[in-house]
Length: 172
Image 1 (cartoon, rainbow, N blue to C red):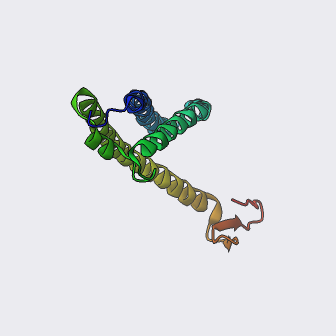
Image 2: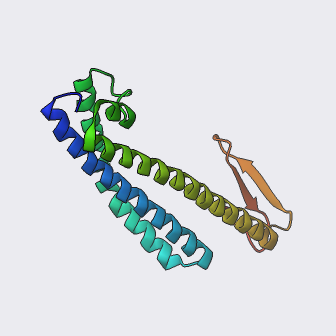
């Protein structure tokens, strides 16, 4: 190590453990997005409810991992005498050598690959959900609207429509 700081050595070990948790969480998120798309396509309402419940339950534990990572980042920034915004894995790799540098570099590369894949999967899932929403809206308008709906806008500019028919008055 270029910096003979024992504190830095233990912080790098802690950071590696936290980054491994981040990698596991990203992989889990990728699996969840696959499950979500599958449940939407299959119209599996119970599967969707179960999936959303699991996601809500796991949300808190990941927040703790994020807090640990930020605390380690803050301590490392103090050791290197830089701002927390400047402290990143590239800067850390520049200060390390040997096995620890290689491990941090491998982790950084894996995180880049996984986050890019997550970005693509998120976009694909968002597109699917938007398309389902658009199709459902068109279907409802075709069945119930018959051209007699009224479109109104709220203070945020969001459109809503209300059907005005003799038998049905339905607000969406």
